[in-house]
Length: 111
Image (cartoon, rainbow, N blue to C red):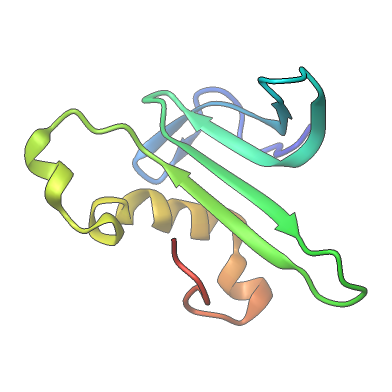
């Protein structure tokens, strides 16, 4: 089991887990499958968090955190992304304990 505490119906912050899995990617061109691409938590509203390790060096790695959240309220679409996504970002940081494990209180890169 990927995340034993991320079973269907579990509350994480303001979100309810639909499922959690080991994310894999299927290339739409050649159909090849890249498995074990990260841990994905998908919530009942379609929002999702993905944690991935990247880096090919012999020391250190980059932890990538992907956040997606669907919004239908047009008024909220013009809000700064950091503010609009704040609840799910906080949930991701709480679940992952990234700040505790890395000693960092903010990302080095935001895209």
